[in-house]
Image (cartoon, rainbow, N blue to C red; front, side, top):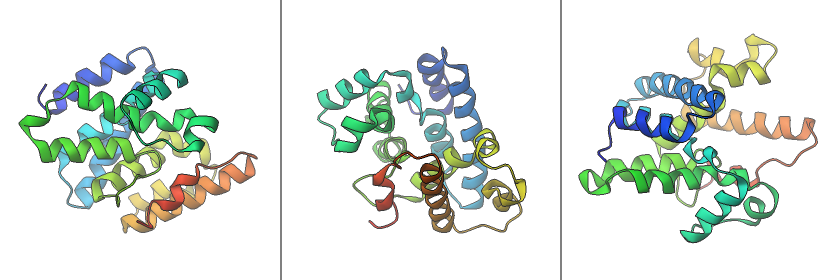
Length: 201
């Protein structure tokens, strides 16, 4: 299948049509990612496709995620295997993307989008690209997610970005990581330890 926005929409529906909340989340992330791409001179089509498909791995159960990643010899960390298999949904989504789309038609485009899907949870083995960071940010600050986590709209990262108060992508990623760690601590749960590596590679 060719890597186009229309085909991405079909794959999105194929995998998430039974989860309307996740489907609508993916559409909101695509809208947010488009805005960020326009502000940061990123390829719009690649950004929209990666954003639409970033959560297709969430169509799977925890055991299915583990099985798919294991059968594809995907690098998995103890945290992902034993504590939070759902953290594998980005890597699983990248595997699904690889199965559904034709790499030969545009290898560079294919590899960029596949990595953005794989890395949107907590980065990966390589340094994150601008596209990776845009998808990570859009997923973290799309309006419904921001409403859930921020009672004071003035403190919202989304609000600051919209007002032009926050521009630098790396700075935004750092602030998102800080917020995630703070929320995890407040809720008495462990934060995904892999996010510490996002900007260090």
